[in-house]
Image (cartoon, rainbow, N blue to C red; front, side, top):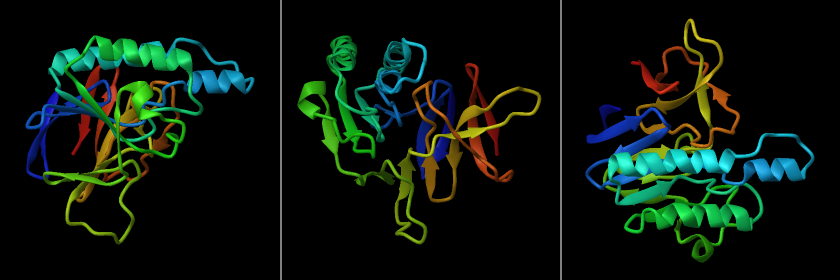
Length: 210
């Protein structure tokens, strides 16, 4: 875990692709994409099973480790249509954390999300709290820069010298931070700007480029 100040607030960065805002006791993730593997298999694409269970187990560990009172998902909670299996797995996670309130900022993959069926509150695309604006999509270029945006959608990844592959990363600019996709079963957009500030999630470790 790394603690860094963002927009005047202390944030805790976790190597499992999450941020904890201690002053609100709020765990933040983006792009959970529950059920993505099911959607791809239904389309005839042979992908491994168990992705949803793996992601929910990681989330369970983070909720316990941080003692979060709230979980906010910054868009793309679901991937595709409703699934009884996915909803049951999610409800089982909630049962283990009955005091945690869950809110979802609507994303472009959340058209099938039924809040009551999942025990979550569905928020609007742009929600302000403290110095932050919580969104799924990044800030529009030239838009209002009064508040600092926390968002997802882009699935940023970086290359690390001496290590093969690409690694999910938090990308921090002057007016916004893009969270990595929480789902382990997603592609990524490579960060090309070598001067960009980022924190990479690399095999249980956090690597900074400041």
